[in-house]
Image (tube, rainbow, N blue to C red; front, top):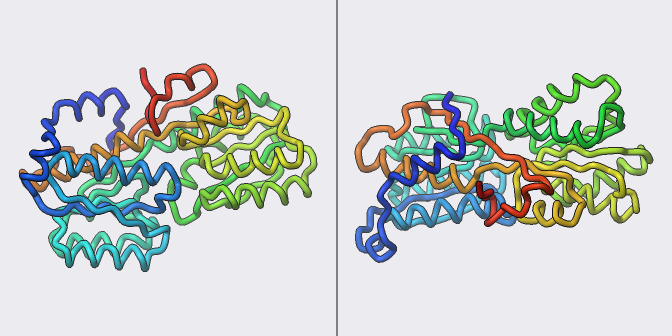
Length: 318
């Protein structure tokens, strides 16, 4: 498995000659189909828009569609990409196990598939699986969380979608760090499915069952922001440390407002662009640009100390 730092990836992408917009439309390399989860979430919106812009820049027609975590919808979208003669598919898989079949289906139809953001539980089908280094990101987030919370606290963990391997990887990364402190008590762990409304509703219930909560650690920003809204409504946010994961624009504003302690930035703009660049290389040359199928992209920590360097959605300047 290849681990790539942000600086290395930016340097590598900078060496790829991209076309001017007018040239891109004139060249017309065919369709690149981009399938994301749910663009209502700013993270997945950025994923699709960056991939689309890169595909157009490289000379393709690009379409962005969303499965919203539904494997049946995902299968229909893959069928449409095959029918429309896509040259490549950029896919954020709906399910680690349930999406294996659609990747096989596209591959059997002669369409290379490049996975982004989430993995499937089988290797050797997709041409590449480009994801955030979730274990590394969870570790740096948990270390910061302990630094802020201390070694003795009652806390809540919000877990993402169980069908997404990223949820377990982040949770395991948190627990690897937090289990070293025996006086940290996990009062509740709730599945929030990456959703702000579920984070809000479940935090309301937690507040009723556990009146004293010192901290929240969350698998993503949306659940964290939902928890913050519930804590504010109950007038219990003051003194509660809440940590997130993604680096969304709303989480950055929450850090600036003093409500969110930190977030772990996933370099979605970087690996979404890189997936399209690698797909173009494979289409053009018939060879893989990067031999390793699973490629990890290191995360960064956004805190009040460096939040001013956040310059665009999911981008942190040096």
